[in-house]
Image (cartoon, rainbow, N blue to C red; front, side):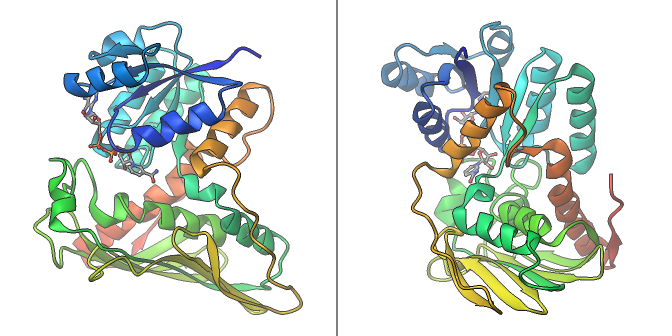
Length: 336
Ligand SMILES: NC(=O)c1ccc[n+]([C@@H]2O[C@H](COP(=O)([O-])OP(=O)(O)OC[C@H]3O[C@@H](n4cnc5c(N)ncnc54)[C@H](O)[C@@H]3O)[C@@H](O)[C@H]2O)c1
């Protein structure tokens, strides 16, 4: 198989994780080109990766016919328009979370990708966490019995200095606050475990930062089938991060995945099912995601990749939390 040539747009903080993940898959993947509007950063990249092509114009980058897949790592509010431009140029797209800031934009992208017969995936690398995979398998095997309650908790600390790092951090349009930036992973995992959300009551506020987007959100969710969920999401935990976790409670047991980064069982109380050993990670979760892309290009199935339809579930729930907070009422979520 020919190596897949990846082109990354946006060479900021998350860039390294993608470059390393591609390197970890170097038998089948290559970082072929990058694009950024910051010329200084492009100079650094040229020194670090002398063989990689660099573009300061996104348009010229998209016109490079040797790039197979565009990887979008720019500020979140640019994702949808950049993904649209890439799909229109006939490129497959892998996009950092969130793939779009609003469900309507995501639906439009999904339709375009389908029309053009192109791949469109979102990066939510926690789906590759071994502990998360074990929890999902336990649910699929019915080990927790009838699922009653699910919880997502994010009690993280983000300082004022953190929000001042880049002008887009903490804005509604480009970042989306704790709901669309930090906790979208946990919102996704709650939907992954609990199924499709039907309705939500939410509150979203700025409690302790000088930012526009909410640093705290609380929500109560009804899922299809009658189970319930609740979310406590904040970047106001003091003085440091406390918790990022998912808990699923059924009538036969409870599993809570927490740890430093969803990599440990904080609770494992399951009738007749002993806690399995979590395997040591051989690859980063980003590298595992790239492995799935390579397998897909080689003709295998989608694996754990999140396509636009799957990404829509958590984005619809996230948007409904915003809407509920604004309108002070329970919001029904209409499945796409
Ligand atoms: N999966 C994860 O866990 C995870 C972690 C961190 C960030 N992210 C996501 O990655 C994305 C980027 O985050 P970051 O922290 O790396 O941001 P950043 O601000 O550090 O980097 C953004 C980069 O994009 C470039 N850029 C901005 N506008 C551009 C344009 N129009 N054309 C080309 N380049 C442009 C900037 O110059 C900068 O180099 C965000 O969407 C964020 O949500 C995901």
